[in-house]
Image 1: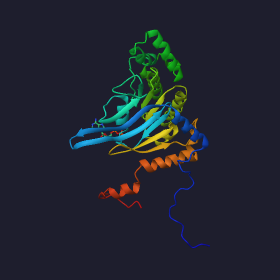
Image 2 (image 1 turned 135 degrees about the vertical axis):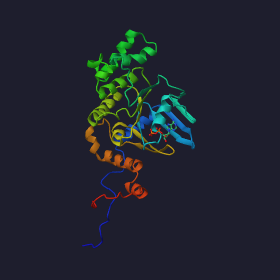
Image 3 (image 1 turned 90 degrees about the vertical axis):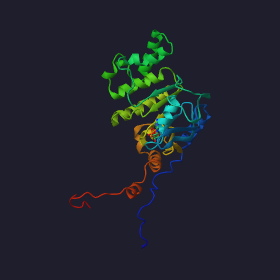
Length: 307
Ligand code: ADP
């Protein structure tokens, strides 16, 4: 019998390398790469002037999103996720770099980009149908046509029974379904989603993720989705763009090795867990390092030691 001691910790070798792809998954990525680029982000930098000098929220961020690709952006708080999506939405101006949709540089908001926010941004005085019609009528569509198109989108998101309800009468998930229908109705090239399910309870959130994938399968739209939830990113995305903070830069682009169509049972698959472990390595700082850095102040009269 060997007398050598067992190592205290071993790397978890039971999980595959997250970069390994089955032939089906590799073929899917080849197909995506052959499709035209819809969204091009080219050396995007955004600086903010502050009291203590210039603060760089994003530095030289570059990536392409191909037609009907689903890209999630993830990273620690303050890494520039919201700044990035606001720039792509045209709600803010970059300091340098370019943003293009279908090869055309964008300046300001436009109908080629639809947006869904975390906080419900529906008009409370309009019904579900009225909210979905709104953007269509703004584009000059007459009332009758706007209503019939809106009803098709409302059906797609499963809200036909609630078409005459007002936002206050809807659950959080239903409000977000309405917001998705409203964002998709004007046929945008890119759907921008900023933590859209962040305010929902866990069960509704899981339902909405599956529902969003169903919608996306049936619509010719490219998705840029911001989240800080690792499982949500893996479940939804083709590629995950991992940002690091201070300054916000691309740390890694992960091609998710989990096959499609996705279903919840895959969250325990080796590919899913391997991707999750990689994201944790990239995003969560090691607890030991944090503990070393934090001064621990012992309060007086805390009582018996706990260990
Ligand atoms: P995230 O969404 O990843 O949490 P943000 O995009 O909100 O990150 O912010 C990135 C960095 O840019 C943060 O340090 C934030 O304080 C800074 N920042 C964002 N917006 C502004 C602003 N309008 N003025 C000054 N600093 C800002």
